[in-house]
Length: 146
Image (cartoon, rainbow, N blue to C red; front, side, top):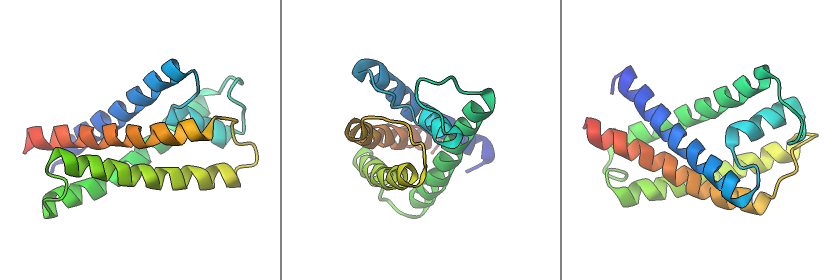
């Protein structure tokens, strides 16, 4: 896989995940966007405090770096196994990394002194679905590019 294909998959998958989280934020009226929550954790600000461009940028950067890490694993599995070369396998991958995401966020919220006050149950439930959208975004690009 060349770098442009990798970047296309990264932006598609992280974009699909982020759009899903943004939509769920509007529907459920909770802040569920990962990039926003990351910026709040890094700045120590509450959800209703305005964030500086520095932390907004860092939130996006961290979100894409983590997405890039999981995309490397996805790429390896796609190229070396048949596990995720179908929709169901990609959904399972999304669930697995969603669970890993919950573990990561739980640790992050526990070690951060001023974690944003959110509805954790709602956030973690939508996080599983968001990671499924992430994985299906990768599946779409990998399937189209061969």
